Length: 157
Image (cartoon, rainbow, N blue to C red; front, side, top):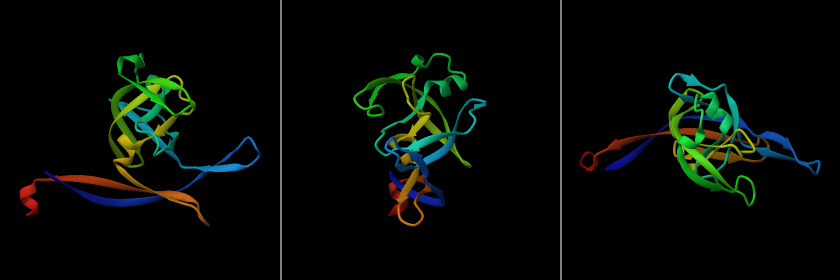
């Protein structure tokens, strides 16, 4: 089986400027998203695009907003790196990630210890978008949605 990518649209976003303890600032690729499960949909919330994160990770409060009373009912996975030197238990639940007009299935992992609302990682986010980071006069990032179409090997010959 051959998989052919079909690229559709690109959207540009500015980085969010955040203050640093030393009085300086940094730029972060912040993206507003929603999660949905069944008929429940969260309000939009800010996430950090993080190519270093394997999974999409979210704070446990978001799971509760979607009706998951006990996050530990999901798939247990240890995750590290979010808080330096700390391994945390995360729990995966199937749901949909909503980014603008795009929505797709994702296994979202939740943890009480998440210091932010969410991180968008390689599995679930980067496999659905090509992300281009820009510095210079107009610092920001671009998202290009990639749709994958399955084709049989016979139809490409």
